[in-house]
Amino acid sequence: MTNQSFGSALKSIRQDLRLSQEALADVVGTTQRHLSFLETGRSTPTRSMIARIVTSVRLPSANRALLFEAAGFRSPYPQRKLDDADVQGTLDLITSQLLRHWPFPGFVVDNDWNFLRANTPGQRMINMFDGVSNMHALFLSQKFQPLVTNWEAASASFYTRIQEVAQRSKPVRDALDAAISDGRFEHVPRFLAGTENVPIYVPIIVQIPDQPPLRFTSLHGRLVSVHDAVAERFEVELMVPLDENSEVPMHALFGGAM
Image (tube, rainbow, N blue to C red):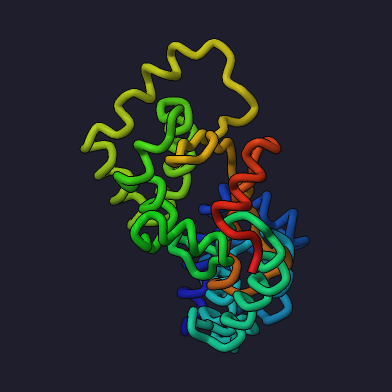
């Protein structure tokens, strides 16, 4: 590829980071003049300069690979796919070392909130709602909503979360748009306008027939030190009971860990 293609890639990434040439040059430890020459193609990037850039600012692995490849260098960040053995090995690691030991529903989801892995309690939860394939389908399903006794409060909280995910995922954006069109969230502005003191977190309160009310929320996180464009999008989602009265029936209902 040409120097200009590298320059265009560098400029686009810098603008996405909302950094001026001066600010990026200061972080990288070079001059604004040299950075300008790199972006216009007047200077040829060295491999060491690219390494300085990608280690000086937080970049997704895909953007790190893009800079090396646009400059004509072999990228140290392989373009793996979901079915790659190493990626699947990472999913196996999360499943065996984390999900297997979590006694309540736990999942690994991708950028579109599709279920990639579930522990035994998580799979039983999925099966309760007709084997849905992703997180937004579960929480927006017609079977789940009637079970939520505090739907207005819980859905207002969920609406904020799904909006965040929708910014990066077209399938989630489409699901959210459909739910909005169906009037599923038309109460949210009214509910928030009438709320004087929003709590730290809003529990989901579910009433399953022949069970006491279940009060739970979720905890989600990512692996750190990940250098792969696919694996860095994995999120772990764990269902967390909020009191002992919910913990015991949740454990009984979903059957404990694998």
